Image 1 (cartoon, rainbow, N blue to C red):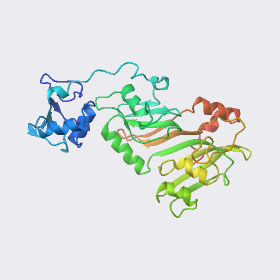
Image 2 (cartoon, rainbow, N blue to C red; image 1 turned 180 degrees about the vertical axis):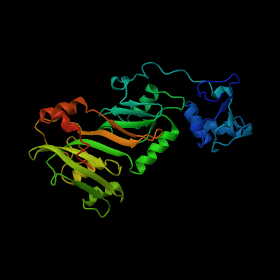
Image 3 (cartoon, rainbow, N blue to C red; image 1 turned 120 degrees about the vertical axis):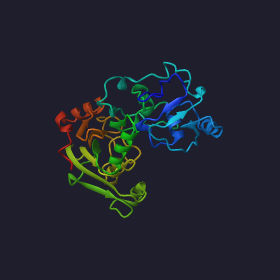
Image 4 (tube, rainbow, N blue to C red; image 1 turned 45 degrees about the horizontal axis):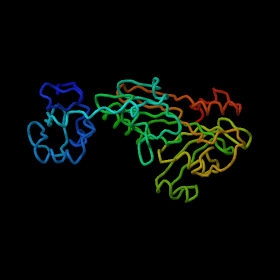
Length: 327
């Protein structure tokens, strides 16, 4: 495979592939499974054991770390793609057909609808990572998730086009250097109207909620943007840490569960004013672009259902801009 070619482009030899910069440092078996998705691990191990897969003409182990410029020799039989999926199985939903919120050679930003699973799993017929691999194919393999959203949560989701960019962004998320802002509709109206919630095993919240975080600190900043008396409030939420279901657990823990959150205590009725769905939206992200080093802010418009609900409650569109409310 010539320098700069993709895994899909075979040379006249048809068996030799040159490792590119972005793939360096991976295990050989991981690179093979990514490059030839029809190739099972068991077959990779057998081909290595019998000397049919070589690096720089020497026998290779599945665990070998590949380096830029190395030549990987493969049997021609494994470089042949299986039959393409049927058009029906490759159908892209309407929300993903249009332009993404942001796209360049390094990252993609999508506005995920509520009800779409981010990753495949038991009971999931399709997921965002599967759909994105079809909608945004690259020579480096499918786009990579760098963070997660709950299935019921709508809003902004970042994907990386290359492994190295994914690793950089994941490091920034872990280091809490990426600023995340959410909009939520909650029951009641928190007092004080601005503050922060911190939870660990000895935190101020009930032990039953703190245990969700397995002893790790969970930190959220919040502010009330608007309210309907003491019945409902529009909240700006800024998760400083990134624990599973953190915002949902924290709002429930202070007695103001997010509307539509049946898992964490939202059993109150709203008189039919608010649809029965989780009213939580990942609104914006601010981060340093992993390639250009510039500050990047991306904003995800509200889904139609939430926008219409907020208008019915008398909240103007400009009230949805929550950047100045928290932090």
